[in-house]
Image (cartoon, rainbow, N blue to C red; front, side, top):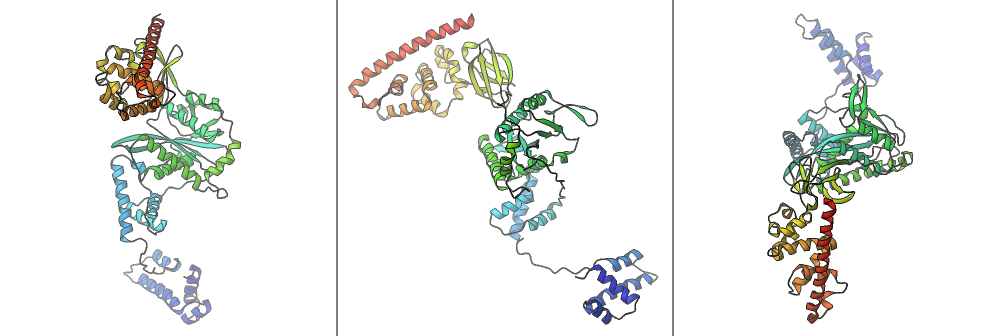
Length: 526
């Protein structure tokens, strides 16, 4: 293809110097046909302009004179973008539309995710080919970002992103807390059920523990958990919790201007990038734990494999270099919310409309409760009396059968129909149904034994008794789990003597336990 100055020179020599086409071609060392083509186009346009019914104006004539030479592109048969590949891309786009219809717009597959999926499926195609075809279907306009430079350990950015997952068969919404280091693009993310202050604080504590140090400055947008209120057009006041956290760990904080996500472009891009890599192709998981583990593994792969702009190093490599520039790590910040709650008649305390059981000795008493993002811990007189995993539904009950020990000993028939029983491990419920249905009070003693010795030991003893066709009850189980020698090395004619001996010991333990319970009640009432 000739350049624009050669085309102009052809027209100048012909129009003003009066040279013929053959001479022009020889002097400029171009094809005679090329010279003829441009002169013909020029003369034709000029002639039309000079006619009374001319269809070209001066601007169009000028275009013909000064535009770059254009050649017809040769039609090339597409070898990579086959009908089969197009069908797969159309399926991706259709799935994106389905996600948008159920409110999962931010987890739609982008071009990179589609390209990765095609390569994994064995198709040989270039990224640009995929991008052009996707754009032809969606007419998507790409966004531009401005890159800046940072020092080691200087800046880290934080943001929230929404993720929707199908856990089991239920669609649930999660908030993804994302940290991204500005220097090396190291990414760290956690999933939470809500965007609450406790989750905000918990994410920071776990991130600092993960990096083994603290970045000097952390950048936020105008999220409610970080900004308490606006003072003027640009000045903002941090929340009290953010002030406490920054003073404890020794980091500074900075806020973006309103609607200026580009001011923390690393994390803005990271939220979308992590969401694409982790949850664009796979949004279905059997349990929350599997979803959390999946996100963790994806982050490990991204940080180890993706190369940064610095000497072809991975983000993990850069983080290793940054650690010596980070502020020293403090002991973990206590993010718990402390309060006093009264135990109701069901022997439960209520946190955010959900109920958690405590031992029935404390009905009507005030207990001290520490509320964490993942657990609830109850204390009475500075002694821990109950611990539960925290729930985030509404009106849910979390019960521990052992907490109702004294009540169930008085009312053993209530065990099978109790809510606490329904939340027992399936194997434990099966043991009750098979061996303790007619001896519910004895089942309470079995639970005591499990809390002391562990379920594995008790279950092993039950299997041994079954193999030897010996009656399964708590006394026989205690013989096995309390013996230091193999139970079946003892001769069978000594079994009854051994059982009697251990039963007497068990009765003595039970008698002592009842006495201790009486003393404990008297102490509480006092």
